[in-house]
Length: 315
Image 1 (cartoon, rainbow, N blue to C red):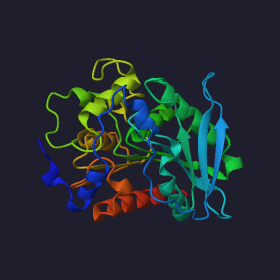
Image 2: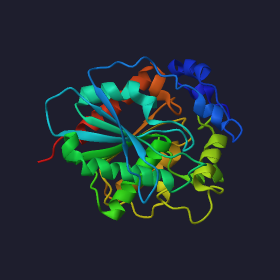
Image 3: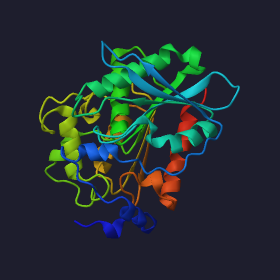
């Protein structure tokens, strides 16, 4: 059904700027080659260092983008960031225009990871890349001026799904203790592609159901929604969400992921995980990145405030 009447009026101009592009194997290269339409980046005195670090078990080298504020305070908290792109596109540099002010305002280090994309490198390539990069950050925390007790994971869309999967993997392997997981409209559940009763109003804009099916199929290497999918690919498949770090989730009421995100938050709460959930009315996928609407400003404010609380030093 058409959901335009439910869209926040201040967000409607964004729909003209970003018409839906239906992903396919034929146009994927063109989609990846498109310049990310980012606004001008303010330096804010934040330094950026790009480092290549070893992948896991002979995998290719991983590129990390390391942002640091101009502060003498040490050690600093750290956001380990994972970019979005439906598992098939995107890169760590896409959100530099948001990362620099975030680092400056919160006085933290932010490390954004470039992981391998699907379908060329299906599961578990991306999550293992993210885990290897996280391990490097923990191992080199002293060198980076990072407090290892205040490292958490953050991501948007597919990056939010990978962040959730990384929190599960870190918990299960027991090598690194995360301080928080910060999930922005995360892509968590491949079964949304095959739901018998899909949401009648969610997912019309930016990231529709057909693209979701394409992204999950590329990641998994087979049809989504079947039995046996690992919860390190689709975190909503995890039977046990206990002992995960304090969690923040936000999504739009018109986002395709709204129901899977709300359900994940509900299950986190039932598992005894401190959890904060925001659902923004009239908002679709990616609404907070480019729009100047009040609902976008509110979402960014809520996200930044939650990150600030999550990164405070604990006694």
